[in-house]
Every structure is written in structure tokens, then in C-alpha cells.
Image (cartoon, rainbow, N blue to C red):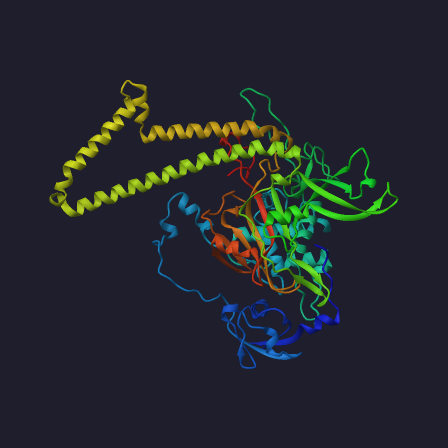
Length: 617
């Protein structure tokens, strides 16, 4: 997205009204955009007073401001004083009877007690006055475990005190604090550094009181770009296991075959950029003149470019993320034609030639609206998947490499799911049998006597069947018909291990070329930065993070994967279902997805073949 323009036009004053908020003896100057609903205004009040929107009582001319209130209909005047009632603190909680018996930490054993830190809600970030855009971006960025690991574990605390690495060092401190405590963290130093490095984020509001709201996508892009140039670590080459028994090993570790440009000298290893390694993709760009006279017999020229974000364009015909991404890969541009000797229209077509392990998608929801002289928001509903296949957006060469690996991964995942379903069925059956036995015991021997002979016969038949399955009957077909659960499990595990090894042999040539890329074309949704409101420089930003996307940078342990998500609303963190994330498709001024962070579907390789942390599930 292009850089934000400061609104100084007269048209903006018609919808933005400066007022004064009074709360507990303090005054706050606030600019109210009356074109947005009451919910946005209540979040502004919350960022200043700390009073949760659910706890606020705001009366204007005898009317209480609610989420759906039309602010334009309240007749606000410049410098009007508005009284806010409510105590700062957490939102009211509805208490319900627990469905699971309470377990105390001191009663947990072994692995249970070691995981108690992962079961608690993670830390939020305190809003320092219109900084929700930054808080949401950092929480989504934290779901990249390699970035956390490189900052916290692979960077010396005082290795480089230069101004260029200041932002990376402050981000390291933020991630470290978020990982070591469940209390909200106040990112004062990081915010101060960000505003020093890029004065745009230090812009004041139009009233001159306080800092202006900023665009989360601009903050994300700037931070990632800064890290790509300043956050370099020493590469630690690791050998890939041999392709075949006693076969040669590969020393290939990354797509970068040479040290990074301007990287500091190091003995025995090169310096690499984590951002370039894991978040940067490549595209092949082809330009074709729309006029046949402007083309040559040699064919169109093709160039290679890198990208950190894929844009999802939104128009009246776009209903799904796939359509918006494909639209963003083709565009019309006007440039000078050497053949025609004048300007002409060219069609630019992009095809992905390298898929990064983490793919960032930007919904192009904001545009410059001339009549109000501000960045307005496209409200159109655009759905997005939790698992996405982008192979159709790749070059023919890359697609040829992706498809066999993708199909093998799906085959292995299918076998893993089948084993999991079988185990669940067996547990359910055993549970039902235990319940039946308990019921018989309660009824007594006399009440159960009528069924005793039948139960005995059934038990005898079952034992006889197991016996036949173990020893066989001498006939091949009968022996196959009778197998114990243990035999069936062993066969399934052997089949799975064989399929996993086949997957490794298939993907290994790709790993030898570039082991840090996506080799399947499949991605899973990890985090979403959402925006509530009608314009880029107002409203409220929050982040949604899949629970198992958070990894402890010290131990490498993942948080629980139960299908739910963490919702980071500044320092307020709550758990929501996947349906809440699906609702971020948009369609109004409510929370709508602005940034999507996808991670590569893990390669289900054999444990003996895994050489990198965070490499597989």
C-alpha cells in the first residue's frame, strides 16, 4: 500500500469533529469521525481511558452511545464536552459452571505440569494511544517461530549497538517479554524506536493532541523490510540425511548460495537474512505489448523479482481470496515501446517461481476517496480459506516440482487421519464396554443372569477369533480374515512409515536446492490482522492467532491445537472459535481481514529425516 497521506482538505472537516472526553477528572481531546458507528468511537474512548467498551456509559443529549449508534445523528459540535462513566479494567465476564473438573498445578504429573504455561492465555500488548495497529501487527508476526528463535536465541544481546539494528533489538525484547510472562507487556521502547526510525509513525492527530492512528499494513511492511536489511544471523549449515542408505549427503542449506550483501564477515559461515530466507518469494514477470506491431519474434522479455506480500485486489467481481490473488498477478501498464517509438499499453503477468515458507497476503481494502479526501474502506465480503493451494499461480517449472510432493503429502496425511480415527473409535468402544460392565455390576448377578449365557458365548467367540487371528487356521484366506487390533495397528504404522520415507525421497532433491521454501504449494492460515471501521486512519485493529501457531522460543513447544484461536484486542486476550475467524471476510464496518499470514503445511517426514526445528508437524 502506498504511504499514508495527511488529510488537510476541507472535506474532511465535515465528518471529523474535535470533542473533549471527560473521565474521572481528566480531559482527552478526541477527533470523532461521525461517518463511523458508535462502536468505533467507544474503542477510541477505550484506548484513552482504559474503560472497556462493554463497561462504558456515554450519554450525549440524553442518548446513550451504543455500538450501532449513528454518530452523525447526535449533532456533535466542535469542542463539545462528553462525559464518560465507567471503571477501567477487564470487560464483564459471564460465569458458567465448569464442564471439566478443576485441576491444580501441584496435582499435575510429568508432562501435564510442564505444559501448564501453554494452557494459559498468552500476553497482550498495552495500547499507548492509537497504537492498536502496531499491537495487532506484532502479535501476528510473533507466530513466525523462526523469527522469534533468531531474535531471542541466535542474536547476542550486545553484538551490535548500531542505530541500524536498533529496531530488531527492541523487537527481540518485545518477543522475549511476551514469551516469559502472561501479564500484558507495554511496548514503550519499541514504539519510541519505531517513531525514531520512521517519523511517519510519530505523526500527530489533526487536532494536535496525541498521536494519529496508522495503517497496520504499513507498519507490518516497514518492520519486515527493516528486518530484512538489518537482522542478519550467522548461518549454521546442517547436513541433509542421505537419499538412500550409504548414499551421499547434501550440504545445501538455503537458496542463498553466497553471503548476504553488506553482511559482516564471519569465519566458517555466512550471514543470512531470516526474512529473505523464510518470507521472501520470487516471481517471473512477463511484459507483452497489447498491440501486435509492438511485439518481436523473440517473444516477451521475462525478468525475476522478489516479493514479501501478495496483494488481493478487491472489485465488484471478487468474492474469494483466490480470485483477488489471481487478479493481482495480472495488470495493465503504460510504458514506452522501443519498437513503436511511443507509449503503449502492456500486459504484465506474474508467475511465482519461489514460494516462501510463510506467505503474507494483503487485502487491498483501502483506497483514496476524493469526495471526503481520505482513505476509505472497501466493505465488500471476500472469503478466504484456512488451507490454501497456490500451485496454479506458479510457473510451469515450479508446478511440475510441487504437484508430486503435494499429492504424496495428502496421501500421508490421509493415512495419519485414518490411524487417528481408528484410535478414537477403539477408545470409544472400550469406554462403552466399561460402562456396560459397570452397569451390570450395579444391577447385580441376579438381574444379569438372563443375559449371562449370551455374554459368555460372545466373550468365548471373541477369544476364539483372536486366537485364530494370532495362529491362523492353516488357510491363507482365513488367516487374513482374523487379525488382532495389535496386528492391524502394526500394519498401518508400517504402511505410514513407508509412505513417509517415500515422501522424503521424493522431496529431498527440492530440499537440496532450497530447504527453506514451500515444496507443496499448500498453506495453512496462522494469523489474521483485522480492521474495524470505515477508513484506514481511524477505527480499531485486532489480531487473531491460531492457538497452535504460538511456539515457545526457548523450548520449541507449541501451544494446544484444539481448532480455536486467540483474539488479541490490545491487552485483552480471549479464546474464540474458527467461525469467528470466518466472519472476518467483511461485508460491513465490523472486523474485516486486512493481513493474512499463511504458513507452509508441515511435511510429515520420518523423525530420523528431520534436521530443522519447526520443519515438520
